[in-house]
Length: 227
Image 1 (cartoon, helix red, strand yellow):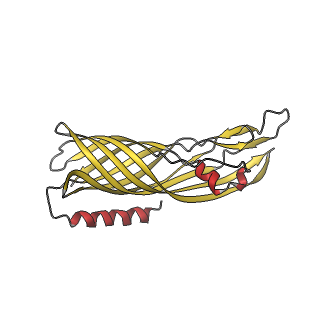
Image 2: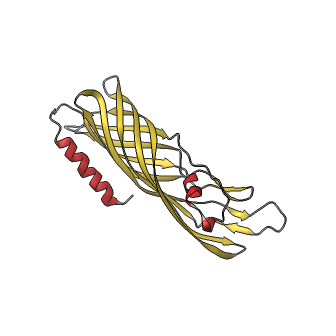
Image 3: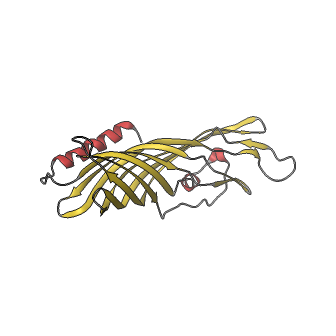
């Protein structure tokens, strides 16, 4: 996800907040760091590969709904985060099998999101959040594949898709002068995963195979401000 997209999202959320008639409604802005790991997939018969974990930075806006206390609308997104595939070895268990190297192939993901959440007060300053959101996700795979010491070809595949995600958060708010910051952690997961149906050469990666790499869970920490 490109920075201008995040900025447009921010302006849209800010406009919604500015129109809220009730000044006591809670509004939040938070910056988060999210960890994901792409799923494993089959690259040669009986051989799998999986990209390393990656960290991405994003922003999220939340606004309390006037007619429903503790219910929030949410809008946000995460910028590009990348990690490389890890396979560097023989393409099969047979003696003399050629060695392949996919460690130059980079898997990059980003998303925008919109959804709703319910924050359950736990004491005066702690909130447990239950969130449902739709994420418009983008996934790319790019880089050179080597086999037997020579370049086999380049991977250059990309896809976009929409999936539902559920997220659970826990945060604590405190006063710092005239401001009221908060910090927290969350975990998220999606019930939808695309399965790999055919085995193709990595340099000819098809759309379904690429989608099978999409992560199905994430963990994040965040910090923000009430306003």
